[in-house]
Amino acid sequence: MTVGSLAADVPVQPDADEARRWLVEELAKPEYSTQPSLLQRLLEWLQGLFEGAPVLDLGGPLTATVVVVAVLLVAGIAYWVAGPVRLSRRAPTSAVVLDDDARTAAEMRAAADAAAMSGDWATAALERFRAVVRSLEERAVIESLPGRTAWEAAETAGERVPDVAEGLARGAHLFDDVAYGKATVGPEADAFLRALDERTLATRPALRAELAPAASGGGEAT
Image (cartoon, rainbow, N blue to C red; front, top):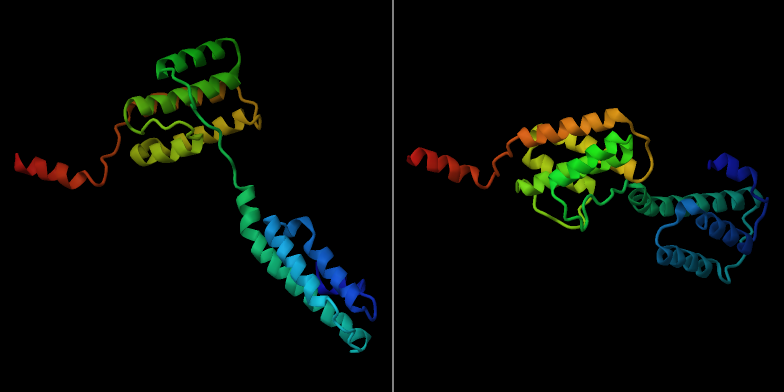
């Protein structure tokens, strides 16, 4: 919305009720929606601001300019307040990887193999990434944490096994796309996750920063 386009629709001499209606309608648009309580407080404030306000005889063009500036100012404030909330709502969500699944990594690999043999590449991809995460738990690279999402697992494990951090992030993205039905995968996805599983198993976790001084000190003592 620009000042020029809005001014073209402004009556020559709006009264207080008309100006209040414009402001309320502007703030009621979906793009300014944040928490209902905040929007409600803004609307109530606007109603109180114009309640009983006298109609100022400032002349047609001047009155229109004042109303336009007021609308743009309040709309800008509302947009600025709503921005962080709107961005957080757009933030991507991630699916839970294991939840209450008590299977071992070997059992999950077997399920992935069976799905791949039958051409069920979506199930194969999901089971293969679950096997990667479960194997990281079994090796104590990451702790077992119910409800952990694919991205949380990738981020946590990536700090301990930085050599495969990029692959884990890609695997988490693939897992989410398949879990939410956003992507159709084929044998190439299974091949990638097989390779990721093998690379992760072959990678030694990085030494924790807080243990590095003690480890180096112990080596010098001997």
